[in-house]
Structures are given as structure tokens and as C-alpha cells.
Image 1 (cartoon, rainbow, N blue to C red):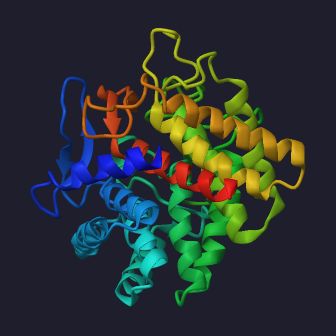
Image 2 (tube, one colour):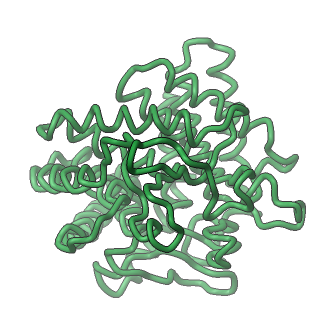
Length: 365
């Protein structure tokens, strides 16, 4: 499947009109990517796909495009807007670029991005603010979304690569607070945790993109698996590893018979609800890394096998786009309550699918 992804990546990259026109989604019936500008929260995934495709192939044309699309994101930091998505935008792009080339220019951008992300940290609460606008529109004094766990990777990296050492403490505290607020006692997850800004106490857990405040939004659960696994990788704290395992256990247990999650595990319209291939891809990539950390052989095999089953299902004609459009995968769901990107191809589904395939290849070696 890596060859399939590389070939499709080459088709897409040769059809993009400019390096600041970034693929985001393809709706049913369309064949080519709808694009966004560099300030969209998903802008880092397409350069990330290019870096992974280069890693898989060694193709110099892909490398050239990866560098140019990554360079185009430099302007993200020129806009003075509080942005909790800098990890998604710049670590998936510049981070992968630095990992593969050790270009010092990428290093500088990443440190600057970490400085910017850290400004959203509220020491009273102990987490990074997610949506400043929601403080007004939703009357959430301070909110933190489960997606934000992935952005912590930027802070961890910076703390170990010439940035402020306090970034490590911020990331750890954020993960610890979220572990006790975004995660319910049954190890399902809220999308959003709302906090008071006076004394920092947890007010409530709610949803924004899930079916209801008490439901299990599939992509959110996947973010949790992936996020706590990377937090364990960066810290070695066993509570993060245990949390990742318990989140994965719930995800695996609640998967439908056909193996791919619906957009929300509790949508009452199941089985007539849309699927979310992106949640499957994120969970698969997270569980592959998780399997490498778990000491118990039975448990490790469980997570690796679960990830392989997800990838196998995603690699069937039902989910592969093949000749239907330029993406790798079909049937992702972006924001169901908002009515956007439903049953679409979405760039972050492709990113994590390719990442998972690369991780599996390395594990099998």
C-alpha cells in the first residue's frame, strides 16, 4: 500500500496550482482536492504527506515539493492570532522535514512555533487554551479540546532541542489535567473540557463535534490514544501509557462488526450513520506506536493486531479511493454537527494512514 500512496501523492502534487494552495478535502462526486490557504488548521498535513511519501520512496521530485510546500507555511507565524493548532500545522510539516533533512531553517521555525504555542498556556488551569473565540460565543472561560494532545509534541520537541525547558513541564501538566477531565471514568472521552479562569477548576465536559456531551466521538477517542502514547514516549510516565491502553481498549471493544468506526460511537442512527476513516487511521497509527511500548507481549500483540485490522479494512476497495479521486481514502467525517466534510476524503485521514503504514513497515523489519 505504500507504493499506492506514493503514486497517488505524485498525481496530487503535480496538479496543485501553487505551493500556498493546500489540499484539504474532496467531497463525494468530486475528483480533485479542494484547497485552503496556509492559515487553515489542516495546512500542515499535505506537506506531511509529501515528507512521508519521500521517506517511503526516496523520490527527489517529492522531496522538492515537500520542501516548497513546507516553506510556504512560514507565513503562519506572521499572523498575530492565538493558534492552538501550530503543532498540526508546523510539526507535521517542518517537524517531519527536520527529522528527514536536519535543515537548520526548519529547526528555527519549530522553536518559534513552540514559543507561540506556549503563550496559550494558562498556569492557573494547567492547560493550553484551545479556542479563544469560544470564551465569548460559548461562554467557556477556558476550554481545552482533546485534539490538543497532539500539539504537545511540538512543546516536547522544543524543550529538548534548544527551546525553553519549561515547555516540557507545560506539556506534562496539560496531559495530566486532561487525563482527569477530558477522560471519563469509563475511559471514553469528552471533546472539550471547560475550566474556570479564577481558580482553574474543571467546570464541565462537553462536545463540539460529537453527537452529544455524553457520547464517544470517534476521532476524539483516537486523538486520546495517539496523544497519550506520544506523551509516554516523551516522558516515560507510566500513567500516560496506562491511559493510552485503556482508551485503546474501549475503542477496540466498541468497534462495529465491519471494523471501521462510525463518526460517533453513540449516534442513534447507527447503522445509517456516516463512517470516519480518519478516526480509524489515527487510532491505527497510535496503536502501532503503543504496541511498541507495552511490555506485556499479549497486550502488545493485541494493539498491533487491532491496528493491522484497521489498516487492512482501510486498504480494501470500500475505503480506498483508487481512481475515484486524488486522495488515498474515502469515507471520513469532519464536522457532522456542522454539516461539513461528511463522507468525504480528508487530508488528515491520508496523513495518518500513510504514517501508520510506515510505522508498520518499520515494526515488521
